[in-house]
Image (cartoon, rainbow, N blue to C red; front, side, top):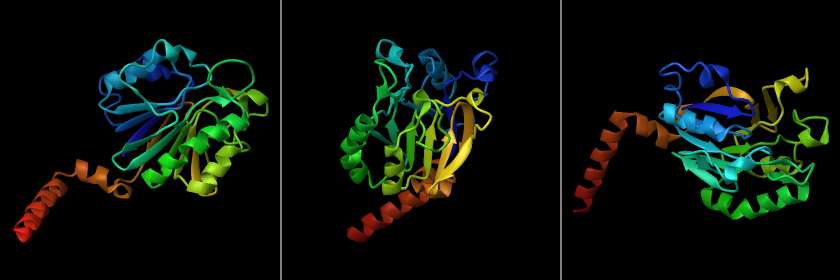
Length: 228
C-alpha cells in the first residue's frame, strides 16, 4: 500500500507542473492540514486514491469551501481496508482563531474518542496537524506540540503518527522522520511517500490479489456445501 502524505505547502511539481499519471502510484492520500481546498480537490480528482484530511490552524476556509471529493477524519476513525486512521487536526491555541486548542481542550477531544478506538480494536495511524510535544515541534508556542499526544501513543501504540505544522525552513534541526516509543513519527510538510507492507493488512492484500478473491469465493462455496 503506497500513501502520499501532504501538508502545509502545495508541492510545485504536482500543483504547477502536473504531468499525466503522476499520482497513479498512490493508493491513499492523507493531508495533515494547512492546504488549499482547491489543491486537495485537485489531488483527489487527478488520482484514483481516496483523500482523507484533518484541518490545520489556517484552514478556517474549509467551513465555507470544504475540499470536494475528500473525507474529513477530524475527531473520528476511518477504516481503510483494515488500516485504522484517527484524525486530530488543529494546533496549540495562540490566539482566538479557529482550529486551535489548549492542552486541556485537546485532551478532551481524545477522551471523547476512546469509545471509538475501543470499538475499532485500536488505531494504526494518528493523522494530526500539530506535532507531539518535544518530538520535532517548535520552540515558539504557536508551534509547540501537544503533551497529550504522548499519552495517546503510550496507550494505543499506533504504528504511525503523521503531522505537519513545522516547516523545513523554520529550523536547521528539521527532521522528516523520527520515532517515539515504537511509533514512527513523520512530518508531512510539502509531501512524503509512505509504503506500508500489504501483508500487514490482509483486507488490502486480498483486494489487490485476484487469486485471493477466487480462493475466498471457492472456500465460501465449500462451506456452504458442508452446511447443506
